Image (cartoon, rainbow over all chains, first blue to last red; front, side, top):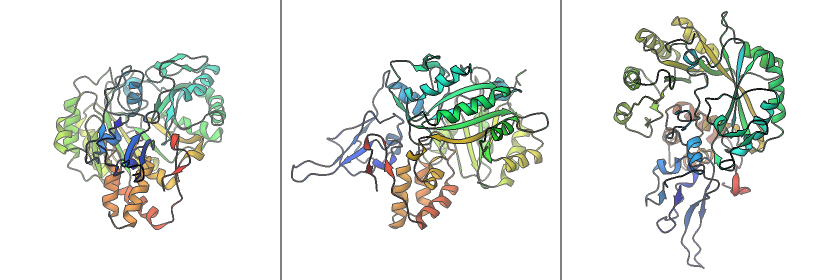
Length: 245
Length: 211
């Protein structure tokens, strides 16, 4: 995204809409005869298109550019109107538990762990997920293949993200893995250690298939690890067909 | 959170999504009959940023449908309707687990898979006040800016906007329709009535206070 400084009147209406705070307003400088105008700080812009879709610019100064790689990767991860090319899924690019009754991604005896880097609200450079990828690799935890972030990892052992995109900033990106219940404590401990090694924030999601008795096996594992599971969350009602066998 | 239920409907990409546009459109039209706070399709928009007709006509195979309900009795009726329709698409209900479980019990549905949040970790000192986060995090895609919440509070205090109008403006950037403007109204009322801490904008604007 960019703002044409010649057309922009400097009204500032667009400034608060940017989730990354990447729109700067330059005030009128009467002494220098310069008019007020807003500018999008290019490297902080994640190409989410919120400023453009807000439609608050009366002068039409906000321009949606045609993007190419590597910058296009920002839109894939940040603008829900783009589908990730590797998964064909919009938004975060992964279905996670939402279709689990059909995909069978999370089965009995396993727990899904998702670390959404940059959420809530800080955004992240794709290279900032590398400590997490590296840590999971050190525990022999395989990342979910149907996940757009997994698909741009160049080397799982070092955690290195593909060179052309690793400095691109995005609203958020999910490091996603499925681990056996027996490995949960080790992984939760590693996640807690990770908290001290990153420069951004990450939200932790824990997924489990509901047991036959209606209990949630992941909850005991979280409590054992000293993690308080949320009192609210998502429940897949098992209505999708065909059911995974 | 007791009056905040989000229903999502989607198909498994690559397995069942082909040809599903019609089913999602049908479900969207059926659920319009029930009182709700927001609705939308991630591929088109929500009630707060798109025309209902555009949403209705815009369903494609990769659409993801959302509805926000604010009372349990409506949710029970909705689930009953969905169960009877037997559309074969995945339905995820978000809310307080005890409330969702009750809705399931009353409609003879069994939870299949659940997701809990285990919190936010890392450089949490970079985050804004949690009352602001309570509003911004309603958009699962992170499209509602903390600065926009502050701007709306400012306008309410100056009498430029009512709380309802401000909540509607906050729902605008959320294009999939999961944002609950009724909950936003309650949270805005709290923010307007208490003193607000200054919120520093991050990134290359580090150290520059927006307020």
